[in-house]
Image: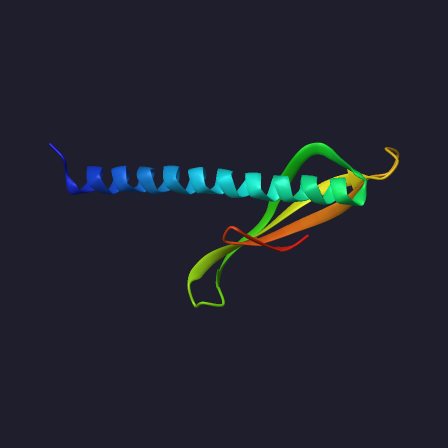
Length: 97
């Protein structure tokens, strides 16, 4: 029998799974943007990854609620030094690299 508490936990689990799925897609967008930017700048993207550093809800230009995410990555010009880079997204849109 489906009780109210079981329904709550089921909905919570579904919402968590949906958030994870969308967050994974958005991280891939950030990764591809960082990779393309490094290629244009003729530098090497180190560790082939981006890391989520900040997440917060914001209102977009159209007034809709979206998540603002800041990802960081590291790159190198010679292989000897590491430098930091940032990708900022609002929703699925890249705002800054």
